[in-house]
Length: 291
Ligand SMILES: [Zn+2]
Image (cartoon, rainbow, N blue to C red):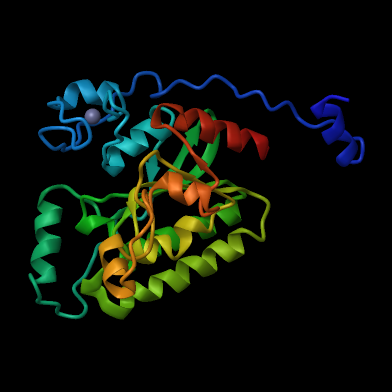
């Protein structure tokens, strides 16, 4: 008996759907990834980097080192060309606590805004291989992709709208955790987005989470690792506290590759590690399986 027949028997005789992936262009036709800020040389192989060349390689070095991308590049990679529709761009960060150390929060927000950065989470709708989805993307360029009141609100609203619209929710994370400049207001976002995820998972649509380098702290401890399928990029650092802090607290030597995507896969924390060149194809395939 073949694998398909065996699965059909387990499924009460109902034939299982074909699992062959559909061909998906990557990046979408007509789109070029926006230029990303890169180090002068690859920290893995030492080769000098050229942003224009790497853009064509989806910001993956010849040695397979995956460089961090901004939210604009991620949207260009994941969304079908011309399908991205941002939501709640009018929500802006505020310095509610008059935070001054080590630098006034108000001036940090002002500087980021001048650079055209739009909070640490982009939220909106798009299609992926023709399928409408809600998509949220962390942008590490805005205060290290930290989770604050506005980013938490955009995430919670997106997840709730995905539930109401009966659409899949896809998250791409790159975050240092909760934003210290917003204190408890930032920590509250963990409970808020987790509540939204719990309600979403009472529906029938999938939640797919892509964890990129790095995903840490309150973001990893809340929604980023709560998806139906948690996908990590190769070599991504994923955890709660950093290895140095853990070593100082526990006084033990940590195992090789501690907190890498591959380590987390081996220990059941993520479900798969997918190369960026195959990610769009994989997301389209997983969404199709849930149709
Ligand atoms: Zn390299």
